[in-house]
Length: 218
Picture 1 (cartoon, one colour):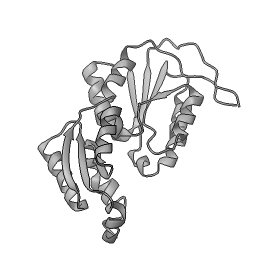
Picture 2 (spheres, rainbow, N blue to C red):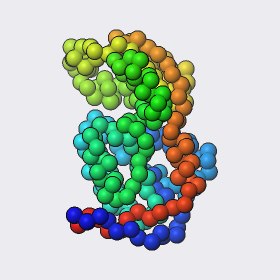
Picture 3 (cartoon, one colour):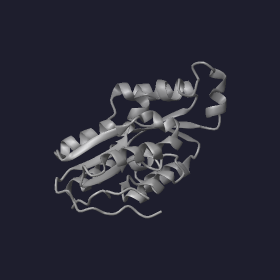
Picture 4 (cartoon, helix red, strand yellow):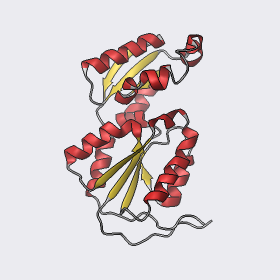
């Protein structure tokens, strides 16, 4: 199998950020505040978080569709439970992604997340998005609305819930605390903002552009 061939830059100045739907609000806010009109934001379904083995193929399909239309493409995912398979896809197409293993890490920063996790490994994390989607992705997504007896199986080894907030409101904080109560976990709130999302997006908006390869692997 050969590597994709690099093409000449298109010269359009367009950059595609292909991201997880869980980051839609944060990416849109940062992009608008920075005035980066040349950045196009596209999102994959946030529900892929529950089936991470499907993320690499879904991302590759979008990369192929976008090839030849942008001077640069960046992927707004961490590894997100793909076990390195997403990186294998991105390596074939010469595309970079957000740093870290998951959104918790790049919202807090790698060093800060490592300290947070090491202090209490039995921690369940929520972001603004996950607080809003707690019922859909966690409670109903794990079947706890139908089989509440599974609560101990899923969360029996956890001791606390940490809400890593981006743009907290009293309502979101209250909903996060309620989620902790429903799961039987101690609640903590840690405002972290947009973390690595903002500097990465700002860097994308300012650095020289390189074309996405135009030929797929043979």
